[in-house]
Amino acid sequence: MVNLIQHKKISANKYSVKIVVVVLTLFMMFAAHSTELLTLQNERIRFTVAPKKGGELSGFEVKVGEQFHQLLYRANDYSKQKGWRGKSLFLWPATGPTKKVHQLGNKFAPGHYSVQGKDYPMPFHGFAGRIAWQVVSQHKASIQLQLQSNQKSKKYYPFDFKLNATYTLLEDGVEILYAVKSLKSNTLNMPFSIGNHATFKAPLLKNSELADFKFSTTCTKQMEFDKNNMPTGKVIETLYQGEKLFHELPERKAIPYTDCYKDNNISLIDPSGLTVMMSQSYDQSSKSLPKTPYIEYNLWASKEFGFISPEPWLGAKNSLNSGIGLVSIAPNTSWEWKVKIKAGN
Image 1: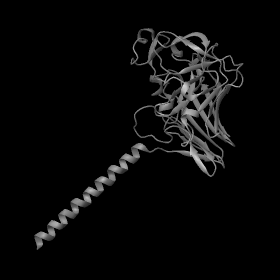
Image 2: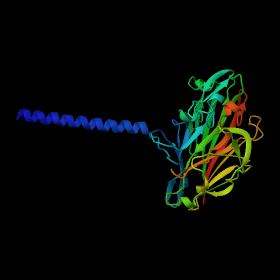
Image 3: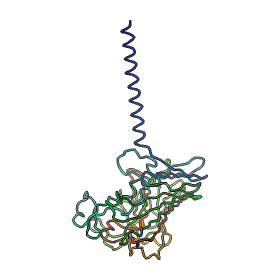
Image 4: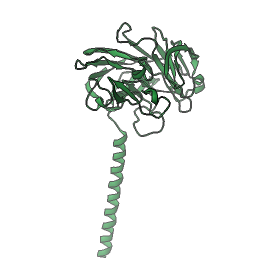
């Protein structure tokens, strides 16, 4: 009898241990996949920002009828997944790949460029969108984040900088103001390209037909690429002008738009009548701007996976090596770039 009781106690203890192990495992899995999200909302718009995940816009919802609908692809999901991560990766100080001449023929070669004869690595689309930002402030209608240069950033980029991203809740969307400052400790002009990889569901609403999903743009030309798929500095007419059906776009092959004029936008037109417009603006008289042409939108889409990414840019692939699409600001000066996402019927 005693042995039986002891056996039952031992079995119960083993069972308790198993429960604890399962709970701890689930907690660790949840912790690995979760992240801090800041939310702003009004009657029609709700969006989230992830400071620790590159300070990006991680979700964008629009109220249709009585319900909010998430429009960003893979919004707020930071679990490990195959394929494009979605959301809205911030691209800085590079847009696309950064490769020296001897690396151009190798698709998988790591990115590199030089400053005053010293070689530096540069990740695809830069590094700013893959590291944690600090929360400066959060108010009823705005969130401000900041990223500053440090010893880790100096491994990729030998400049002292301060980046601010201010997210402002609009009646019909969100405005993101990026402020780039080159600190006075720099001895050279600070070069960079800048972009936002906001990726939307295609179609925008779940019950809409993909065959009827459209986009439109004010852009009339696109950058010419060479045999290595890098900009030549010349432009060609684009086949994707005005309003087009989504299925006319090539599968995951970017359209590097330029000549987008003053309106400077791309609109996504859902069959339901919901339209999302993405636009960008900056001081066009600034001496910091690159010589034209440069990529203004790098449209990229997939019918297979159901997403479309307008990608506003002020830059080009490989700008840190070629100089094409390269912004350059003097020490102790600042430069601003504004992106807006608006939704309407």
